[in-house]
Length: 121
Length: 392
Image 1 (cartoon, one colour):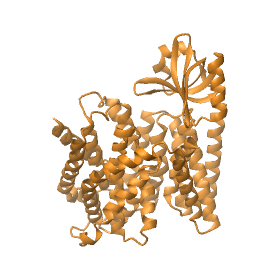
Image 2 (cartoon, one colour):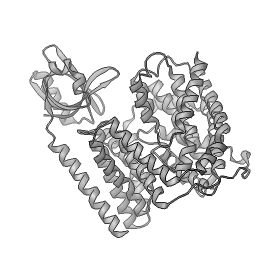
Image 3 (tube, chains in turn cyan, red):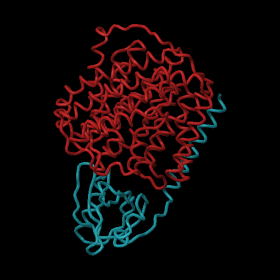
Image 4 (tube, one colour):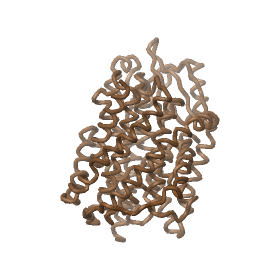
């Protein structure tokens, strides 16, 4: 029983670290907003990296929403558990109209395309 | 037309509810895949289906003891009855409790609307409640070793929750795979190792005094009412809260409480999904995403709850003796192995091979409470930690 406990704990630790490590090292596919908008179904549920101008930023109590755009092609994005630092970063990008890179998961919610943002680079 | 939909929902829920370990969230993915959400079926079908599925699933969950995050405490209790030959008594108790709840819960709905409207935007209550429960999980342990074990289970489950629900890079449908791996696989493996056998079920059973137990039902509904206000809390936390308030409850009273709480959670989740877009169950969330929870008539909603409950209880009454008779002729161990293999095959078929890693890691974490002899509910931190991070 003692050995079984030890084996299971070691395995849990090893696999948990592996999951965290692989998630940290994950290199997402880079896609432009316009091609993402056209072929969204191909990327649905996939984590991607994209670049664009932040528009229509809305900051709520614990999440922020915005549109990431390339010319007139935009995709709705949502960042859960946003914080002050990140909100300031988004505000700055939205005012300066500089291109910002984001990493996030493509999703369809209520028949609407969206990116659930994991990181703002 | 609505009456036909209710009948259809009850009948389909009854048939699918008899299949062991087919969680309602998985069924909603199948509905999605089959295009059930397209126009011709309304909310009344899906409500009747879920009620019927919940009540019918008491049969396989009592006999096979395969829990999920919603029924974990109830299943272990009802299986004890089953192993003593009192499975039929346990199921009738749960049905009786659900029947009484189906009437009484309608009275609670206006209060839920009022209370939820007040608490909707008070976020700090959510994270204080989650933090309090997590700390309670740890500090309610008597020895330092147990405290450490529970703390580790919370951390392991929480990390898995964060990297599958919040930052998920690899997995498809991680929620239903993880819930299966954390709750169901360890229970099935434990059942196989324990070498349990089917027991002949008694046809007659003890009488209980309904009058003196009646007040348990509204108190259970109220407990569920309080829990539904907090995201990530399930009927299991509500049951724990109830058992802490009402200590030394007799086993049959537990069943009355748990089934009333499970039933209430389902109805409250529908109600919050319809009026506040805040479903608490995966199944209701998928209905909401597919625009099923609209055009609701509250009178029809209430009628559907009562009618579906009565109809499915009647169907269960018709088959319960035959069900137990058939089970007795089967090889319990073999059935459990079959359920486990088919479920894993089904998950890999629906998702991808990465799921195997998630299944294995989830199983190992879910098995920790078994080998350290602590409550299996602590694994629910899988949902609580990511929710806590969302609200902090």
